[in-house]
Image 1: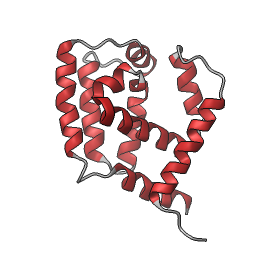
Image 2 (image 1 turned 90 degrees about the vertical axis):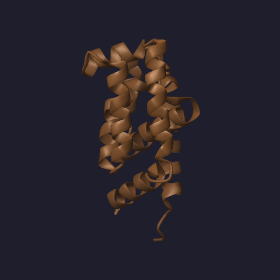
Image 3 (image 1 turned 120 degrees about the vertical axis):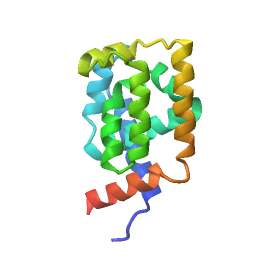
Length: 157
C-alpha cells in the first residue's frame, strides 16, 4: 500500500470530522452538547479537528477570535494534543493564552462554561496579541501539519 502524504491524511481526517459534526444533532448554543459531539470523534479525527481549528482561528483572527468564537473550550485538549505531536512551543503559547483569559485557574466544566460565554477586555486582547506574534513566529520552526501528519502516520502503522 502506498503511503499517503501528511497533507492528504490531515485533510481526510479533518473532512471526516467535519462531516460527522455536521451530521450530528446538537445545539451550538450549548457548550456541553458541542463538546460531547466532538468527544465522540475518533482519536485521530479529534486531534486533527482541534489542532486545525486552533491554527485556523489564530492564523485568521488571533487568539482573541479563537476565544470569542468559543473554540477555547477545547484549549486544554489542544494543549495535550500539541504536546503529543511534539509541538511544544505551540502548546506553551496556547497555555500562556489560557492564563491570560483564565487568571483564576478555573478547571474542567467551570473553565468551559466560563470560556464559552467569554467577553475579552481590551487589556486581555492586547495581551493575547503578544501571543499571536509568538505563534506567527513559529511558522518556520514548528510546522503543525508535518508534526501532526508524522504522529498520525505512526499511529496508523
